Amino acid sequence: MKKKMLKNSVLLFLFASMMISCDKTQIFDEYHTIDDGWHRDSIITFNFEQKASKVPVNLFINVRNNDDYEFSNLFLIVKMEQPKGKIHIDTLEYQMANPDGTLMGEGWSDIKESKLWYKEKATFSETGNYKVSIQQAVRQTGKVTGVERLNGITEIGFRIESLEKK
Image (tube, rainbow, N blue to C red; front, side, top):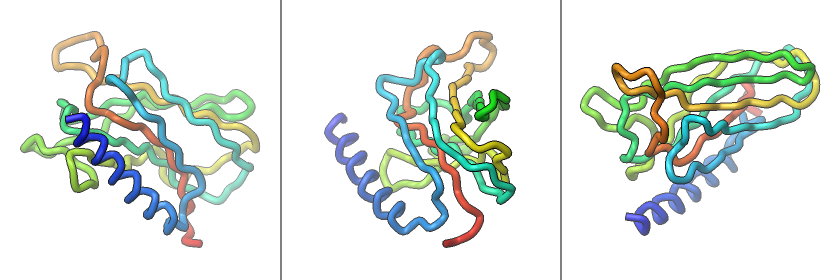
């Protein structure tokens, strides 16, 4: 199983590398690997420098998951901190599986990648360091406390795209 996952990870990395090299809209694109399940208290953070601009961009959360992901949806709490301290917090829900239980997303193996909308046509009002923090908030039906360790999510990414093709 681990050998198959390693092979699939290498293939996905090579494919992603080829796609990124051809990507003219990318402004920022970074991933963090999740080992041994995503703990409910674990917060994944992305830091990036941005100039103030009224030119709109699209923001995405990228999720790589495998067949160990047992839920049909994914709940995330996303916090964006601006350079001068203003904070925006969103609770987001994304569908991750089809009605028949098969995982949604792109990929030829048991690893799927989903490019999830975070903010469409967003602008940055301040110049400086921005911080985006992502925390999983999945709960089992009928339970109050969240899933302590969310299995099947292998990587979380954050991406900023220009609306113009360069």
